[in-house]
Image 1 (cartoon, rainbow, N blue to C red):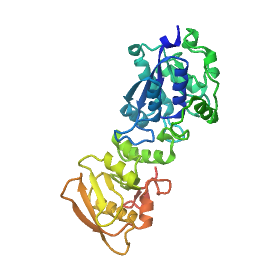
Image 2: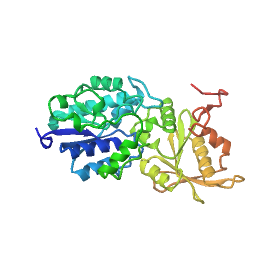
Image 3: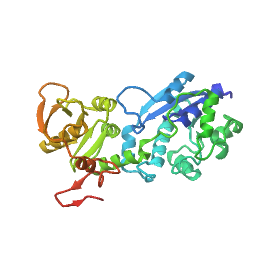
Image 4: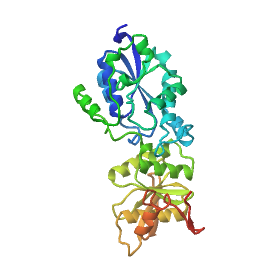
Length: 356
C-alpha cells in the first residue's frame, strides 16, 4: 500500500516533538488525523480562546484535527495514579496509558492502521524509557500499534513495519535528552512556530506541583480549579479557604475570565491593584485578609486603612471594607510557594505548623 492510502492517528500535544512527528509523517505522505487530548495541564490557561501551536501546524498541513477533552479523566488519574508520580505531581505513565486507550478506542471508527507519537526514547526519565514504553503499550492494549517516528530506529519493529506500512529507513534515530536534533529538524522542515522545548506538562513544574498538592490536601479540585492554579499568586488562609491575586494586568484578565458569576471579586477602590478572589469559605475574616493582601500588592500606604470593594460577579451592590495592607511577612508566609512556610498554611490555633 502507498502511504497516501494508509490513514493513521497522530497524538499531538503542545510540544515540539509531536509537531515534528506530525510534520515527518505528513512528508512521508500518510493520511494523518491529528488527535489533541486537552487534559488541562498544559501551560496555557483555558479560557475558551486560542489553541496549541501544534494544531496550527496540523491545520497548515491539511491534516484532519480532533480535539478531545479528557481533563476530567486525567484529573482523577492525578488524584490516584496507579503507577505513582514522577519528580513532582506528574503521573506520566498513567497519563500515557489513558491517552493511548482513548486513541485505540477510535482507531476502528477512523479506519486507522496505527498511532504515532512524538516520544523520544531516553528523553523523559519516567515514561520514555524502553521498559516504561513497553509497560504503557501493554497496559493500554496497544502493543505493536504505536509508531515512534523520531526514535523508531532505537525501538523494536512495530506491526506497521511488519505489515509493510512503514519502512525502518523512514524512521529517525533521535534518543536522549538533547533537544538540538529536534531544533535542527524543525529548521529543515520549516517549522518555525512551536511551544518552548522547555515547556510541557505543568505537573512537572515544582511551583505548580506545590499548588496542586495544596489543592488536593485541602479539597477536591475540579477542572476549573486546575485552571485557576495556573493564574496569579495563591495564599492559603485556612484549611477551608484560599485567596488568589492576579500578578499583572494580563494575569488579572485571565483570572477575570475564569471567575463564575457568583464568585467573589475583591479590588482596591481608590488605586490600581490586583483583582482577587477567594476559593472555599468567603467568611468576613477571609475577606478582610484577602483585602489586606490586595492592598499589600497595590502598594498602599501601610500606615492607614484603605477602602476595598467586595462584590459577587460584575453587577452592582458591592460592599466596601476598610483595612490596612498586609505586612510583608504575613503575605510571604501565606503564599503557596517554596518560600511560603509549610505549603502556605500554619495552624495558629494549635500552635504548630501543619507539615504532613
